[in-house]
Image 1 (cartoon, rainbow, N blue to C red):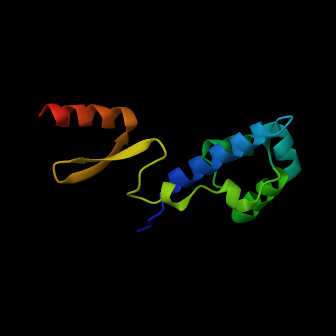
Image 2: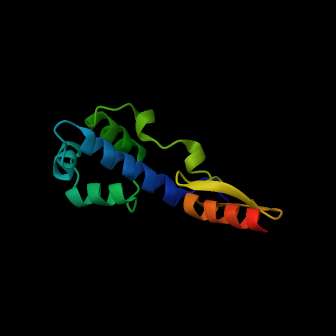
Image 3: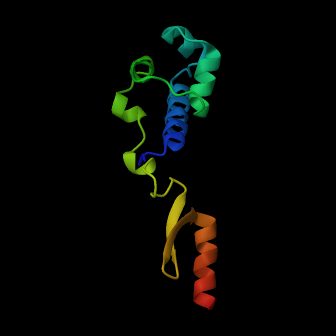
Amino acid sequence: MSVIDMQRLYELLGKRISEARNALDPPMSQAELAERLRLERTSITNIERGTQRPPLHVIYEISYALGMKLHELLPDPTLVTKGMPREDELRVTVGSKTIFVSSKTAKTIEKLKKGA
């Protein structure tokens, strides 16, 4: 049983690739990145969506093409470890159980707990 949430890992990696590509001045298109990597543009689209899992050497090539160090591109391990909150989640204790919920839901739960 893996402790890494693979779907979350590749979604966050893809999001970081997209953000880094668009943050360049001028922004690099998916087609330009694909050409540099000798891939199809649809592969870049799928990588950025988290639906295509690029091999390690391609991740290295992406970081080089974007002018980044590899560790800057990879998500923090705590964000992809099962049982840990996502970037947009908070830990809330309800009774004896701890759960991770959106910040909006957390506020609602806290209001309900105060009113009880």
